[in-house]
Amino acid sequence: DGAARPHHAYFFANPPVGSRSYSPTSGGHRLEYASSVCLSHHRTQYSTPLLALSIVAPSGTYIAEGRKILEVRSWRPDGMPLQDLLIVENHKYLTAPGDSDPEGRGVAFVDVIDIRPWLENDIEAACAREWTRGYWAWELANVRPITQAVRVTAERRLYRAVLTPSVMPALLAAKDTT
Image (cartoon, rainbow, N blue to C red; front, side, top):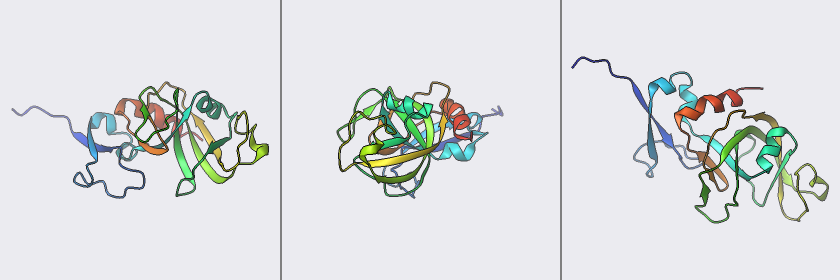
């Protein structure tokens, strides 16, 4: 019919952390569809989902405010350092494999510059009530708060956040501040 049609782009949603293959035939990765109008400004940032960590409220807010400079976990990630990690605050503990909370919200980007054994004198820096032996202290730096409310589903451990194109400008504005 000769009418101009918008260009479109596909991006992968939720590839496994550490995945190097983004082929539509590899492992059943889900494809998301988005208009190129939404993707034109930051095409490379849109093409790769953001690495995220969910944290139960109010700890995510404390991180965004700079009050909580250590995140305490019972596990360590494989690769270090972790840069531009999206902190997603949610309101329920995710304890079982596959748990998620669609009511999460992105509150900050951080860099994890070191992971070391959690020490008893780290309680205040972690905004914790008590200390338990055997946990890891994730040292947070370069905190960049997200000032707009951005809904992001919270999942367990480190994960690739599934994001809609409409939230990306707010996230990228926060991520790119220094």
